[in-house]
Image (cartoon, rainbow, N blue to C red; front, side):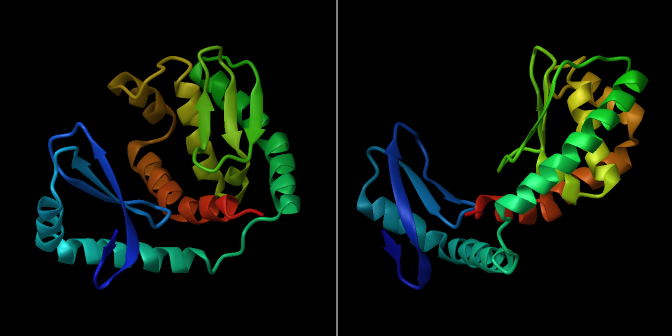
Length: 195
């Protein structure tokens, strides 16, 4: 489906929902979710009523994609080098924070993930993204602390964040989280475009 004046194809998905929802995805796709009973007239009316917002979001996303493409995709050699550095640095740092937090962990795995910075399994295995080695040290620490806090709380409850903030003040942790979302998005994109 095309909208006149907007340089993006719109994917139309019908389902058992009650409202119309439009999403502009990170990969540039525009998805319009509509109730199964929605008529073409209903869809046209929705698009007309929201045209400026749709155009603005699509334009911003396309501009963002163009900015991202200025950065080269990571090569396998670069990814392997990051993974090697991560294997040397992260286990030592995780052991340091685990001792301070009074928790244990089992195995650490370094991955070249395209969407996550880290994870913790119920068995106590920790996974970290090799891209962390492109981050400042305190940002890396924030991810390690976050995953170790899951050794006490396998959720994101207030108690979980108390564990995190006991190791890293909230203001600093929030800044690290913001950095991961902004600067990290560039790194994730470069990993996604890897050939």
